[in-house]
Length: 429
Picture 1 (cartoon, one colour):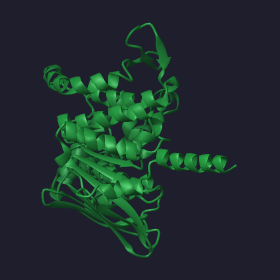
Picture 2 (cartoon, rainbow, N blue to C red):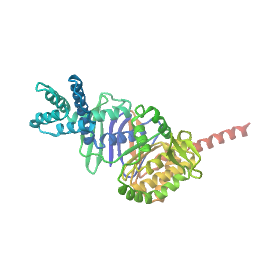
Picture 3 (spheres, one colour):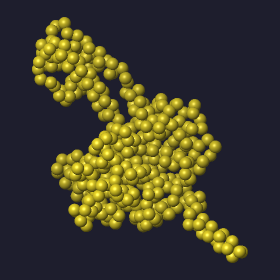
Picture 4 (cartoon, rainbow, N blue to C red):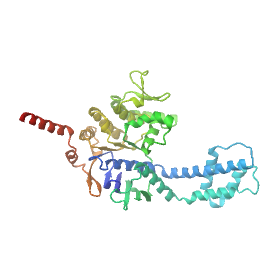
């Protein structure tokens, strides 16, 4: 898989190979996070996009049909049972899939069924066909462009086109097995899109362990006020994958074998589990009567618990995408090593596509060494961001990782130099 970006937000040019673990390094405020956000937005916007568009058409038309029929009931004081939304959805689906010549006959049949006492002068059929034509006026091309615009607008707060050339075109191309998803943006709006394939894998973007606090907030306040990627994470943290009993049993056995080593590492930090009572609580492994509100956990425990909950809920599948934006900043140095080992094992066991942004030499070295230990170093790609006059450029430095380490001066070295300077001054005194 390859992600190519041109003139997008802070990025001038990026060609990123994503096949295993992709590590993106560089200074702060240079556009590293934009790579992961872009990948996540493309995946989630394109995920089952044709089915989502069709379902949206059905939902819109079914609500219009429901309003029309309910108004007719009250207008003529008709007293008969209400119909479920499933019935209206069925009506809408039949209309959207039928030939033009069949529309009137279908409307008549549903009118007889749902408005049995309506008279011959009823304009029901005419109105319903009008709703259908209004629905079909919006082409799939216009609809899909609007979907991409909305996803990217929310992910990037409307700042989509280049910050250095607002009048130019921004381009994103995601290539998988010689097929492309290509998006062109102008003035922060998608003006052209072409998807040669549908995405059937999930993408998760994790940039804040405190998202786990929202598990209890949404029980009271709902989920709509949160950012797009946080809503996505929360749904997966709360909802278990829906499978038939037999399928779930077999799937659990397969996953258990893959998870054993990973859970052992995570349990060194977060051995307990999340349980739902009046609210979501963290139940300690050594004493099930001992519980703590998930929001009260330490930040580091939350970081590990998010991964654990996603895995145990069955909401991550082979070849899914995980984007981790500077995960090390919330972790103790020792836990950074455990987190790096977890990332490497997740890739090895589940063949995830993992994108990690970092500005920590310590964390990057941990990823590098664990990938060698578990023999997946050939599945790791390293990129270094460099800010130029018209935006950031990303260089593939996989064959020369030392370029990253040279830029990432270890803070301990800086402190050692400062200590030497102070000691020298003391000696001179």
